[in-house]
View 1: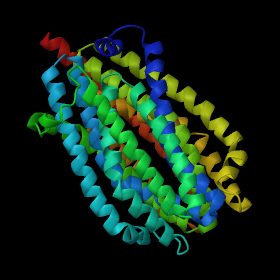
View 2 (view 1 turned 60 degrees about the vertical axis):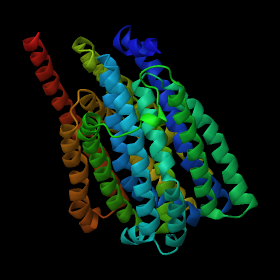
View 3 (view 1 turned 180 degrees about the horizontal axis):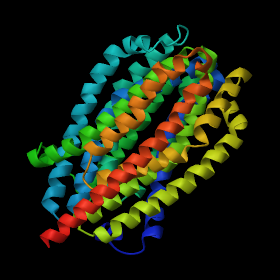
View 4 (view 1 turned 180 degrees about the vertical axis):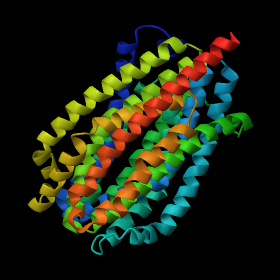
Length: 454
């Protein structure tokens, strides 16, 4: 496996970054297919209310889960730094701290999610017709959320080690199983949203087991040995220092999205349905762009560990160029195919489809700005900085959107879906400019320190 490590530290960057990123893109798309399959199946066989019920849970689920998934970012950066500096003991201890952390987080989320889902959905103003089905979906989903945590931590470790193919293979298998189970539970057993939730939990469990087995089978410093799992203080501290700000940032993103979802809910269940279907389609564009965030984080992380600062800025510019091109092409394609694609989700409301097209126009077309923002964030974390990108993102995205919702959006003439959606691209552009400036400042600071010490 040493060849995979050295690929990040030497050789041509453009081709290496593209080959590394493609499996991450495909893996992320497969993850989205879990939820897409849910929406398509319930839309085809249960109606738009069931689509709205599943879609209404997304922002709340992300709010609860993303904080803890942020810790997997800390685990990945710790492994990348250790591999770059060839400190095998650090890599071993990081991995054996990360896995029990994932399990502990999963158990906590199960208790909170199963116990309080109906209350949280009520606070969000979920439409009355949608609320009972949304609560059922969330309770079943959170009963198996430990699988989600375990998969994300293990996948972060494998990617930091240069292995982006194994998660792709395992999710491919799990994705096929998810689609089959969706059809069985919804059509044959008439389980509605409960069926798609159960299918998601089972498929996520399969992917979690497979990715764990991949770590158990490794023969290098990234090998997982169950009997050696414990919380190593230094590695747990680094994981928390990097991962907690990432988790806080993700959660606060989700809080702003929960507020936006509450605003979406105010337009009625037909609008909620169209918004949910459109958001799911946008997720495929986002997944393709966010893959470059992970690439920037791991490539820069390993090169920081190896003190190869001459490659780091090149990695950033290549990732920014790739994510911009990807976002523009996919955003335009998704909008052009919007009427056809939305009809797969929604079969009983042309008005819901028109609402979905409006969201695609306002958010999906300028989505490349989000990708550039994410790459600059990943680059900062690869440098070892996590508080700075968290603070910038909180102010540039979360605080800005909350301000927008409670001020501009409340003006009678601006209380429209168009005004609500406009807060997305503006916040992305502002935050990217600040993140890029912060990266360039910290990069120069680290290179100066390296010159002084050498």
